[in-house]
Length: 255
Image 1 (tube, rainbow, N blue to C red):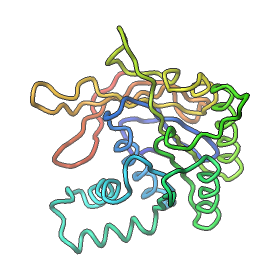
Image 2 (image 1 turned 90 degrees about the horizontal axis):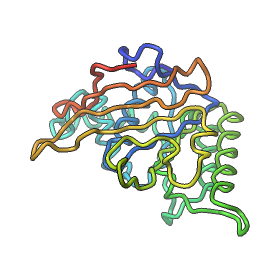
Image 3 (image 1 turned 30 degrees about the horizontal axis):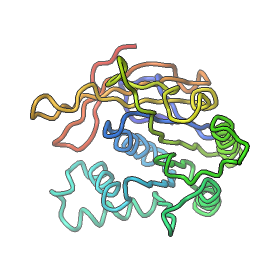
């Protein structure tokens, strides 16, 4: 699947039967950027997506992003007819997995994902963020072993169900000389397996959030890992968030 930024050429491709992870510091735009990338794919390839979003509610947050992406206008500037038209598209292509008690487990997530794939034809499954899933770690199981077991189960699901599963995961706190720098996949809290076991790994990073009182809009997307040549190659892509448009656009980038 082409992620919808022509300037990226073949540097990033996404595919079913694979698993990806996205990390980045809180507030750096992981959810919003990947909402836009998956929207591009959902619209271009006419495929449904199922999202388990535990920190950003589907309504109003994700719905607001999608309304803007669909219409090219900020939500506050939409009339009721434009909102209804956008919402029909969202209802047709988006499934939102919400645990009734707010305590989702990996088993619950995979059960709901299977329903989304089998009953509704979803080809993309996303969990955001990983740390909100209730841990089912065994008494004698280390954190590394637990993460490895979970990732193997998710990867098998993606392959068997012919879908792409993406996990958004927070990095561990970075102190000292690395504070403020873009994290790596090895910085994701819990295990080196986050780097070793995924097919693709991405980092979203904003070098500066504010310059005095002015909001900075530059962002970087790092493609840290691509297991297969068809998925692209490691690179750094420059983005700019257009406040007036509510979306990211490609900027100059370096390989």
